[in-house]
Amino acid sequence: MPRALTESAASASFPDDAVELGRIAGAWGVRGGVRVKPFAARPLALLHATQWFLRAGDDPGAAPPLPAVLQVTAARMQAGTVVAVCDTLHDRDAAEALRGARVFVSRAQFPNADADEYYWVDLIGLEVRNRRGERLGVVGGLLETGPQCVLCVTAPDAAAEELLIPFVAAHVDRVDLAARLIEVDWQREG
View 1: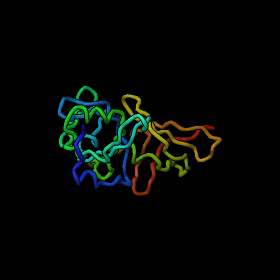
View 2 (view 1 turned 180 degrees about the vertical axis):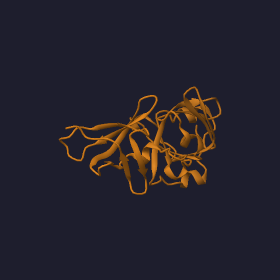
View 3 (view 1 turned 90 degrees about the vertical axis):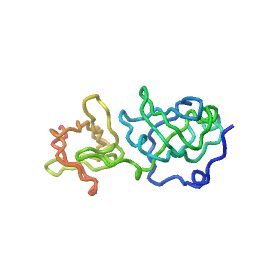
View 4 (view 1 turned 135 degrees about the vertical axis):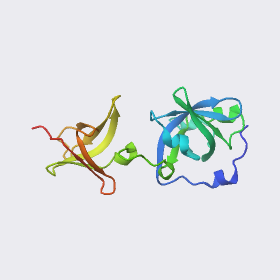
């Protein structure tokens, strides 16, 4: 049986800036470690965060009640997953009971990005304009294509098609997170 949560874990509230970063894939080891399938190839936020907030997976009725938060004491990459030790889990059964849970991290716990690097979550929702000042739309998502990411830009008018703009220096002139704007060297066809 899982042990009771520590007082600090039980009192933690779900942050307003929470970002879903992965799903618990199962137990790791016999002492309550967990394996998380991350959504990113380089899950820096999962590896650095000291608190993981949990929500039920796709079938919340099938899972026992989840702890609100896991206090992460160590995390590392192993074979494409993040393996972590949490002070609130003490045996394999407690960790296995969390299989399928959605893992969130407060955006405030993300490590700082290097110059000219951006978290996808920070780009989604930004307005995209070209060099002529024409509004091309809003970033609705990104695609990982291997060597580069691609901005999926939703057109301002529903009749226009979504634009796919490679997120590379040849096409992206400037990203201004404060102004919520991306300026690009790109034209809408037609």
